[in-house]
Length: 566
Image 1 (spheres, helix red, strand yellow):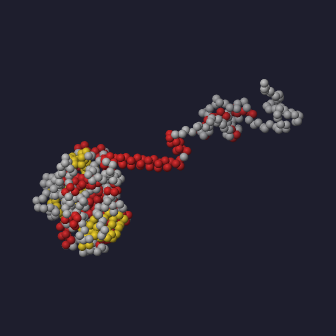
Image 2 (cartoon, rainbow, N blue to C red):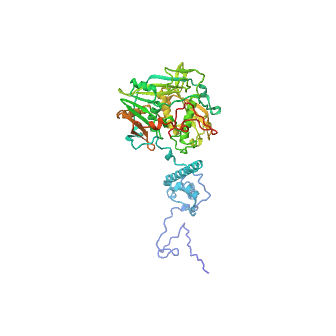
Image 3 (cartoon, rainbow, N blue to C red):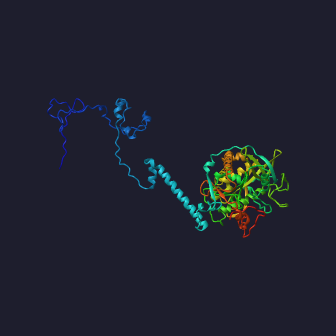
């Protein structure tokens, strides 16, 4: 059996440590080297208490300065203990630490641990994770859109770009392209014009019914149909008043407000459009084709959400444009006081036959001086008149239409009362070009107020019946500032196009907005272009603007002049 032997330990009666030996050749302790003294022991006063586990650090007056120290080190800290020198060896004690003998924690694997700990361990990968999440969310959204539209159209729905972004007019091979102008050039232009003068005012106006300003979604009104009132969309050269003014040399450039506003707001447009330009002698006429898209109103043109392109779908771009034109015509007449009292001007409606009932509209032929040699005459339209401080104020009336809140993400019936600004902001995002054109037309017409109505369907799948939820009035120039529509830039675009066209030879030209790129192109076309296709051959009745079909029957607005391109 192995035993354990304890050697002789000499007793030192004089104090601590081994006794001093007079014989240097004999070791005091076994296995101890000779002539190797013990190191001086400077902590002898602490040998009675090496560690005090009953002590805590809460009574330490320097605790606030030692918050970063390990709490377990307080058992060995005697720097503030008066019974042990009162901190004489504080510097040496500061270097003492208790060694933690616990094993390191085992790594936890799995998605929960990875997302919780990677943020602290790998901060440089945070951006990559965010980008990955964004890409995944975008894929999921695209997948939902594909499934949604596939269910609506049977899975045969083409891409929006292939159908909606097509040219408004078919470019013929014999046309000669003269120039192309990017929209980036338009945004840098600026020009200031003087106040215009009224050459002539025609037509008659009915007063605005102020009760419509108090309409809310809770007391909505049904949109009426005005089948017996005729609306006219006559181009520049077909206007007898403009022909007369041209023969009298009242100006050198002639246009209508719808055509000119299209030019002014061109940088905001997405869909393709075209304007026919005729240079006759020293005069310039801006025209539109019969059946041009300028007669219709785009819906969700600047929205990021795609619309179904099946022509028979009630929410397709084509169907919504026809519906919007129909709503605007009826809304502009419903908000009037129809008591037979009208404000008549110098001449009657130049497009109406004798005894024919026409819509309330006033045509103001206004002239602007572009430079010393160029004057511009524009036929501007106003829809109503109102007495303000015993003075007549002209109004323009337009309507925004909601077809399905799933596309815009904002339900008008719930948001118009409490968040009208959010509704308008959404419409400005989805219909920036249309609202800008309405504002430009109101400024051109010198209207004191523009009334903007909010019209929605009775049911999202019923495109025949509509209700008015609200009517809001804005001052055109103030509203232009709110939507960031710069009037100097608008006139700069018009001035640049006029100067460019005045340098052309006599003939016919067409200005086309590129269907895919933000730019316009100018083509030289034959003198008989568009005549055989759009004037002599009438368009089919089913492609003219008319009320939508209900219960298999079609009602047509009598005297309707708005048509849709075949």
